[in-house]
Every structure is written in C-alpha cells, then in structure tokens.
Image (cartoon, rainbow, N blue to C red; front, top):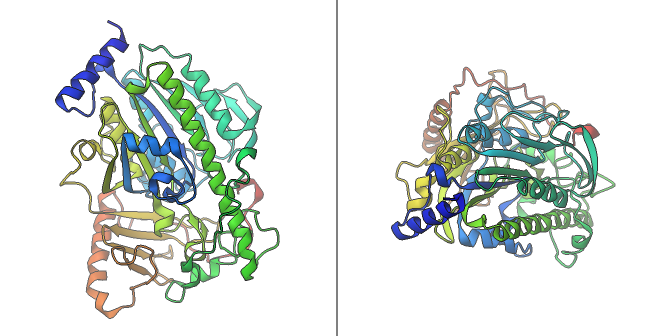
Length: 497
C-alpha cells in the first residue's frame, strides 16, 4: 500500500472515532512550520486587526486552532527562537542575547524528528549567531544568511555552498526556495519544513504592490504613550532613544529626537510599512497551501504559523520589544492538524517552550526529557486540561549593545502581571516595580505597585514568581545577569540593528 492510501485511511478512522491526531508510523503527518519575526497578534485579521486583511492566515485559523493567549518567555529574537526549538528557557539553552549560537549538542525539534524518520529543512532567517550562515545540526537542508537579511536582494548560503545574492523580495524568495525543496521530497517519507520569515521585523519595507496599502489609515500614538507618571523612570528615559516613540523609529524618522505632535506622521508611516510586510506573508501561505493541495499533501500536513516575540508599537511610549508588557510578550500561534476541530480558540496561556514538545507529541516522535515546555495536545483535543499552567515567569537580560531596557524579571498569572528590575549585582533594585490587574486593566494603564491594599497580594505574587523560577532551575542565587548600566541615548551599531 502507498503512504497516500494509508494516510487517507487513517484520516477516515479519525473522522469516525473523533481522533484528533494520528501518530501511526506509517501515516506520520508532514509539518509546515512558518515562523515570523516580531509579529504582533493584532496585525492579523483573525486576532482582531481592523485594517490588515490576512485571508490565508484567517482561513488557517478557521480550520484549526488559534491560541488567544500565547507568549514568549524572552522577548528577543535569538533567545525566543532557541526556546521554540528546544522547549527550554534562555538561561538553560544559554542563548540570552542576539549574538550567541545555539549549542550544537542540545536536543532540538528537528533532531528528534530526524530520528523519527523525517526529512527536515530550514529556509530563511535563523538569527542565532550574527556572522554564521553555515548549516546547523538537525536539518537535512539549511538555507540562511548572516545577520538580519534584507527585504530586497539578500545573500543566502544554500546548505553550505557559500553566500549567493538572490534578487527579489525576501518573503517571495524564501517561499520559492521552500517549494523547490518540497518538490524534491519522496512522498512516501514525512517531512518538516521550517520557513523563517524576516517579516515583519524592522527595517520595514513592503514589496511595491503593498507600499500604499494603508495610506488612508490614520495611526495615532497610543494613549498609554502619555500616561507614564506611575511608571518606572526608565520608561520615560527611553522615550528619546532608539527604542522610544520620539527616536528614529528604525529610520522612518530622519530628524530625531522629535516630540512635536506633527511628528506622529513618522510613526504612522512606520506602522503602515510594518503592516505592508505582513500582507506578503499572507500571500506566501496561500502559495504553499495551493501547492500542498495540488499535490494531495494538505490533508496530511500539520501547519504551524507563529511569531517569535511580540512588538511594542508606541505602548507606554516604546517601540521594539524586550520588556514584559503585554504588547512585547504576546505572540500569535495558529495550528491546523489533520482531523482537528475547526475554528477552535484556546484561552489557556501557552508559551514558546511548548511548541517543541507539542509537535513531537503530535508527530509520534520521542519527547525530549526534562524540558520546561509541555504538549498542548490535550488542550487541542479536548478543549481543556485541568493541570495546565496558571502562571509562568518571564526574563530578559540587559544588553550593552541595546542599552534601552533594564534586566527584567516578571510573573504573569491569568489575572496579574508583576514586574521588577534587578540591578544585576545583588543590590536592591533601582527601578520601581510594576503591578497590573490584567482582568480590569488589560492595557496596563494603572500601576498598582504602590497601592497599600496590594501589599499582601504583592508578597504572594513574589513568592509565586520565585516558585515559577525555581521550576525552571533558577533561584536568586544562580540567576546571573549583566549589570544594569542605565538607559543610554547613543544609537546601536549599524551592523546589528
């Protein structure tokens, strides 16, 4: 019997008996994993965007599962990507900044899938190690570039053959390269294709057909940009820096700092460009889907569409990410699996570290022992899991190359956000902490940290934070971080922006 016949039979059994996932060795599903960079959930139609039309992504969500409360454990590209592929926090995989390689010896999603008989490929932005575009362990085919790459005409290293300039728009090029590899695969063997999109990471440049897609949409600074009196002082200090709304806005503002009211037009232009890059990602998904349908593989392919971290677009006067505020840590995750319920929305808090254990579970591959994430398979199949997490911890380490955010340690529960900023030398924190009631104040507009009525609650949350840290192997004694040298005004080196 052919693999295709067995696949159809397995799907028929799933439909009859209500089984969501199939893990039979003869019918292992393919995996199409699309990882976007700096993608805000609200830049997608299915997550509530009023302006960005994403019909292909929305269709995927309508056919599968959308996680309404998905988060990254470190809001920074390299640490988050390493957590996605390993299922562990940054302090354990050691990629705590954007300049560190993912250690070769660590177990990863692609390595485990290879052991389970999968052919694996990675094409696009890798971004773990700025100056290395060589093939990485776990992938049968690996195509990437050094650094951030360019929206137009990027030099790609195709599986170690050396850098080669490929003209064209980044999103289109990586889609072409992915389809080229998929067309060469034996349909009798399962595959996992990961596409690392550059979009919508700065600097934002839409392809020509989308350059003016949002010209008529007015985009003001968010109201929270001006409500900073109860916020830590460092947030006001950040306003005029590389990561503040009065700064250069990733070069969309040519003369800076500029806090004039009319300078909001630069901010608007930046957001328009950001949105424009997302439209091309939607087109890419449509092309991939069409080919999979034409070749009869769509019905046996798991599709994961997600972002690596969130993005601040003016919230609290900030741009970029790194902080523990909601816009910085929220990510979209959409999953469609063969036989999955259509249009399901999961409200539980899921994390980047859950991706690897979940996909290994669904694909019938061996799990990685002693990791921090857990499989959301039960959540997807039944809609609930009484043992699922109610809280989790977030951490980010101060970067000398981007001195605009302190060390951050935070706890997020279903109701509360508790953030504090350790100095890094075991002395008392020098920045005011933050506390938000997310149920009544989802926009984090009112910092309750100095409210006398919250004293007992803060003590309780602090203990819960310590317990969450300890569960991932961190204690105040072994939680190492750089010294917070303060918010600085100089621009980062052009080579690493």
